Image (cartoon, rainbow, N blue to C red; front, top):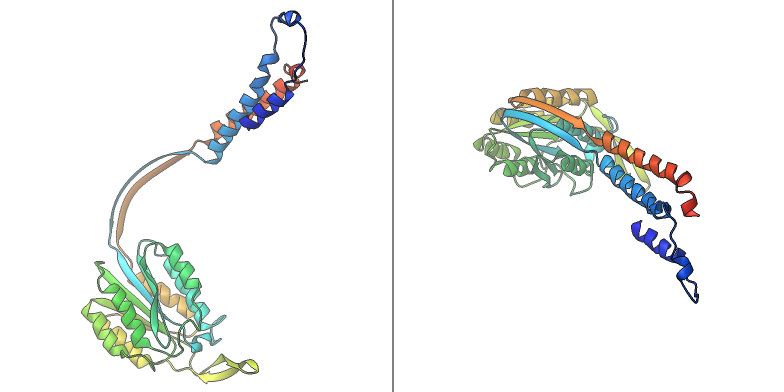
Length: 311
């Protein structure tokens, strides 16, 4: 803005050829013309102060003494085709994602990761304290990302692999599936024994109503719905939980699934003793008021004392 002002001032300076400059040597006393540059100075100062004000300066005083026992949690979620069944709203997969994300947001002090599995498994997100990244990756999960099927043992083994080197006092896996193991090279109970060896507790969740569920099937004529029997291997899921010292839950609708995550949240609470004092003072107002004063002063001078100097 200053450069533009100087450039404009240069354009306003005219030139006139005369035989003698003697007549121009007389100066008017108490001339106010030179003070016209005060306007641009006031405007620049006002803009600088407004920028500082918008930056929202604060003072902050805080004391904090805390003792935290960190918990590492891996969520292993089934994304097979049967997870599209609509006995949950809108379906099992989306309901599981939504409720799990709320669980993650309620545990800001824990490292949490995500493993997904169907016919095979992989780590969607390693253990992280950055829950915003985890939530974004969780929201991107959908059926069809990997080969279809239900490899419970592989999903559990992948989660164990992510936790085995953890130094956390408590290591937990939440395993959610709606079927029985029919693929993969690692049996579920073998994966459970490995988890036990590394002191990892597994909470298993069988998701699905009892009886039959409405599942969308892709056909050459478009998506059609079929009634298919719900095939949750409760015996195996219960055995996995028993071997690792965890617990088995059965979710038959959105509400029961939400209650299950709430129960797990209570069972795996970290003990945190925090003594803290925070005091924040906003400092933007003085800068904003001074900026307003400079702008008002510019307006007054421009329309009163310096009005003639600008014409």
